[in-house]
Image (cartoon, rainbow, N blue to C red; front, side, top):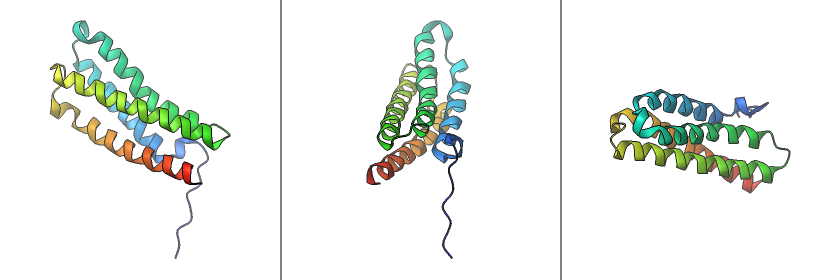
Length: 125
């Protein structure tokens, strides 16, 4: 028996968008643990970059042309890498502990795999 494909009605149906939203929530749970006086710029950059991941997935899904969709998936990937870098900076500066960011790192890896696969599917069509 073959599986019927899942119908995607909006970006909210995309598992990659759902995971990116989970990542955003996890990162925003960590931000208050960072010292506000010393890390305000890093906190702001982290908040913006993690929010950009899901936002770009949604914007790409809303585009009419596959090339535009692929471009926004690429931008989401870049924002994900930026987020991972900001998290690593926070750990290296002692603002967060490695065990604090384990869930964020796991979600980031999952979202990266999904974005890579989605990009490949869009390119191959």
